[in-house]
Image 1 (cartoon, one colour):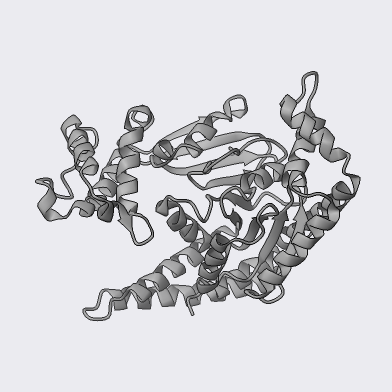
Image 2 (cartoon, helix red, strand yellow; image 1 turned 120 degrees about the vertical axis):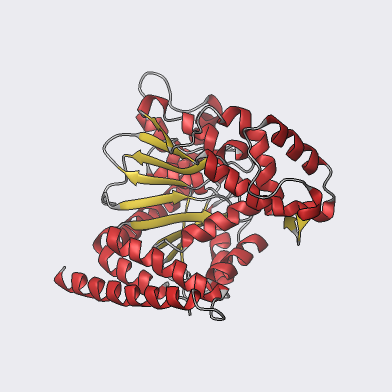
Amino acid sequence: MATYDHIKNELLDVNKSLRQALRTALSTDGLGSPSLEVWLKTTNHIQRQLAEETIRVAIVGSIKSGKSTLTNFLFNGDHVKRGAGVVTSIITKIRPGNENKARLEFKTWDEINAEINQALILFGSAESDLTREDFDINRDDDRIWLQDALSNLGAEQLISGSTRDPNSVLLMEYLKGYERAKTFVSYDRATRILESDELDEQKKFVSDESLAVYLKDVSLELRGPEGFGENLEVADCQGSDSPNPLHLAMIQDHLIQTHLIVYVISSRTGLRQADIRFLTLMKKMGLNENIFFVLNCDFSEHEDLADIQRMVSRTEDELTMMLPAPKLLAFSALFNLFRSLDSKSTGGNGLSRKDQLRLDQWREETDMVTFSDQGTKTFLEEVTQKVSVDRLNLLITTNVERYPK
């Protein structure tokens, strides 16, 4: 521990000196540049992380790969929203604790109006009499004007490159959610605490774009896996291929602060083009270290264990083309979750009739279950090793590697 403290203090001193130099450069005429701003942002993250000593784990992957299901399995309950379509609209941060509760922190009206005024650049100066500082979403006339202005936009303004324009998305979602969100938002920082019996209330905010846009942060305290420790944060992230461009920006910002990444791939599809694009982006960000890949096995999609094993081999080969010696583990997060919910039920069943039938059918596939159980055991052992036994090494090395190259 003394060695760790010594190295940490030396890193903090170096980081402090670098931050001062960057601030000086950015305030000097002719020296400011986007790359220096990235460096300054990185040093700010490192300063905070070294001081907090919190291990951050991010669960990422494409839409419908099973990220939320894996998160629920880890925390032994159906706590975060899962289901069909694009479900996760904001990163949900989870910390192990002694009781289950949720904390929803809302943006202030000033923060919301500032974001909207900045996004009004979408229309250009000739499109409106409003200046960027003038718009107030609480004024009826302003909301009516914005609704009309958005409805008159052409495809060339709504689409930027090959994706939706982030400014138009932001403005539309703020308008759609205003009537429902206004009761929660204030000019002061507003926070809503949900205790165990009302924990599911947070799901409607996390899964609804037009409510999630009003949130600054969502955090849960849940009883965590044995061995994970308390000084840990697990983030259930949006799909990296979400049609909402704001999601990818949120994920990138969060990954800069992350020490360990769990990348989930669905066995229904294997590695997709969306995964390749996102992994390429992560590599450019210097985040190709400390990644666990999980091939999330859907028992219903495979004839037998041999079919699953073929998908494992194919996925390993494809990952090896992109990263040196990728760590791939295969198991069924949904089977694990269903089994956990079933074992916890008392009196009534913790599963719907449909899910109970699926679980009963899967249990008959004994070779698949044995394979999944072994993958689950290895995954939990190796992740626990990283975040508990090797936590000091993880804190130091990831912060050193995070400096822009």
